[in-house]
Image (tube, rainbow, N blue to C red; front, side, top):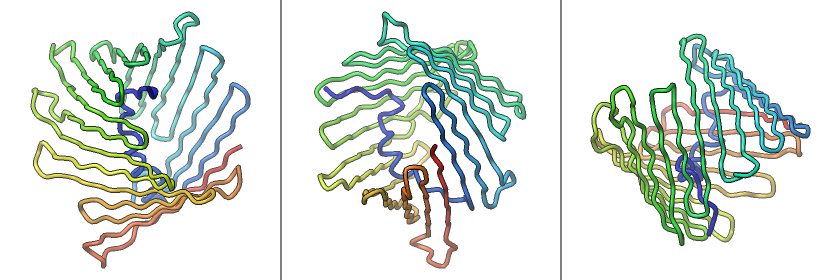
Length: 283
């Protein structure tokens, strides 16, 4: 049996198809990544268009050695995040984690303590956020079929404020997921229903699609294609609103990667084009 994904990663492959590399709203983005033994460092600077905060930057430092991981991230948005992970030597299927997020501008602190257990047929995570929200997520299944739950319980209000569920089918190159995504934190009610599929053909062509029936009415739909060509990744996507987008990711050499993207409205050919470019430097 293939290794189980966590609940939050059940639809990651599909979502990456229409999210990653479509770097619109950026006149320029620079990324730098460096690694030496147990230490790694990454920083990103983005020049955005039509934004008050036109220049955005962030960086993280990470140290990982054996059972221990420490990571600190800081950005120009005044958000700082510190993460510590520990895997007991005698319980390698158990991961203990502590996270602290601090936003100086918004004066918001978020403290999270969690434990995650991984088994061949199920993966379960229990977390406490700010000693108020109790979060529980689990994925379980066998032979390509499974279910998942993602729940948030407010200890102060003594009721559920998040109630998500999923049914999935993974077989060879096909991944299908049917999700219920809660949208009302005040009362139990039907949320959005999302059906998504990811498929990889023998030629390496990847297809990702999703249809969302919204609780508030209406629907959303998107389809994305991806193909690799000798160090170059070509991507295309379209959604229910008629937004057509293309992206190209080119690896110039082992240290330099360039990403460009462009989009337009199919139903309004007179609208302006969206364009973005990103330069990544890896050491």
